[in-house]
Image (cartoon, rainbow, N blue to C red; front, side, top):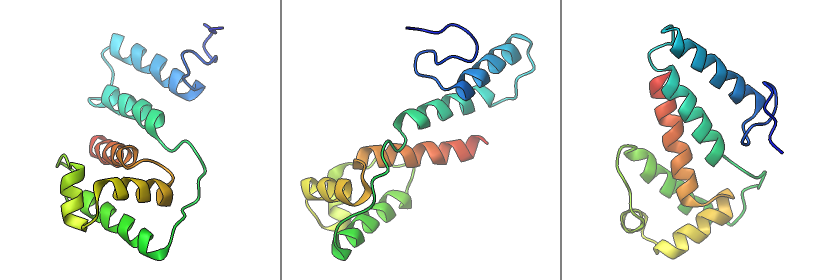
Length: 128
């Protein structure tokens, strides 16, 4: 059942996001919005949608954790680059299937979701 009052959970939005959405709509209609306010709100919504979903603790051996750390360093070396699994594989010297499996085990989230979360964090800091 959909709640239409101001504080309710409409379409899965939290009260905080719903409140900021209403305030943004008002700011835009009155031409008093900050220059990047809509983009910042959109990034916040996306970040919450693809953010961490579990309280999974890291696992795996020290060697696997080092492999995951190398993957993270490769991804962080060029945030603007669209890395493929093959390119990451070539940089850290491991198979693509093994990398995704080990990353999921060690971090508790898939490699693609980690990448999206890092990109969203980067762009959010750029627009703040």
